[in-house]
Image 1 (cartoon, rainbow, N blue to C red):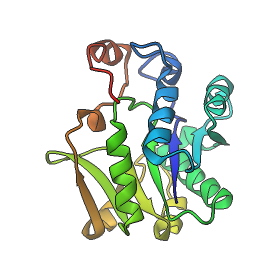
Image 2: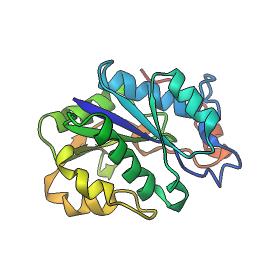
Image 3: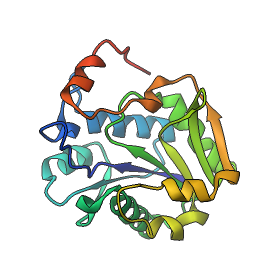
Image 4: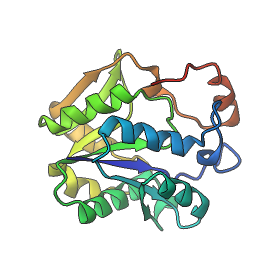
Length: 202
């Protein structure tokens, strides 16, 4: 079983408001769309956990309404590494039987469902780290084996899991995809406006 981990504790400084509550062109809040993508890609039996800040009560409520468990990270403002570590720590506590985690960013709502499923499948089949590649560019979400749990819960700062991925580059399974969504994050209202013509994905 692969658990889904949605990192949703960013500060949205460049957006001007909590971007994860911003509606996409079809009207769905951004973070909710990402949670639904994870649910469909991983399957209904896989647990989902979202990491949010303690002051994101509205976002937490929306995600709980989607059946997502919530982990509040009081360290999240210190950088993504802290929220990543807190999420993995809580996921290990709740679901110790999980073979690994698929870690997605809540500001990347245009990833295809089949991409999520393919990366998760690579971890199920034994990959220490698995990531989608659009051409030569690595994207998100990234899957991690439970064997890397101790390294992930030690993360801090603002680099996320980059150095863990680099340390296991020889074990990285590249999942080739035709999915520009793995490279598209939303940082500003202009980003969201420019993605409005982007086709609705399955």
